[in-house]
Image (tube, rainbow, N blue to C red; front, side, top):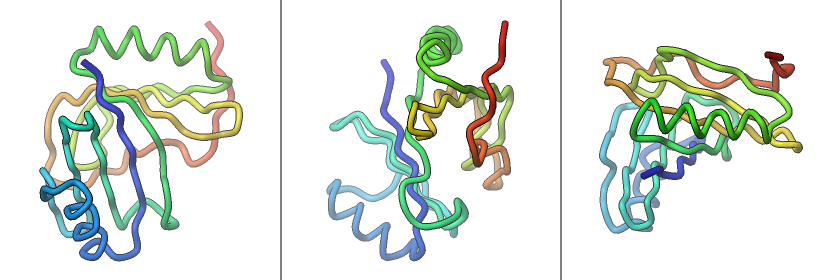
Length: 138
């Protein structure tokens, strides 16, 4: 089963953690000095907030999958729907390791599809592309 992912860049992590803890009625699943994440079942959501993503606001949207096969099928559909995409194998981002495909909608909104394969001890630097990349051709 897939989970919707929203990544928000914040200027004040402590204040934002307080807000989202109140909104969801529970504290974050992961809490670091520069990052917090909620893995919620109702609604089925992976919400991450971070001080390291750039200007405050929505950074990107996404769909988290539970298997590599599910990621492959979803990424394939999104590549067909999107104008541009970028694949990332074994990406290190948000204290996690995994495989990703980034797709940009017609307005340039970044959508990340990903399958997490493990945890890492640092934030990582394999975030999404800052600007849409040209489409890759088969």
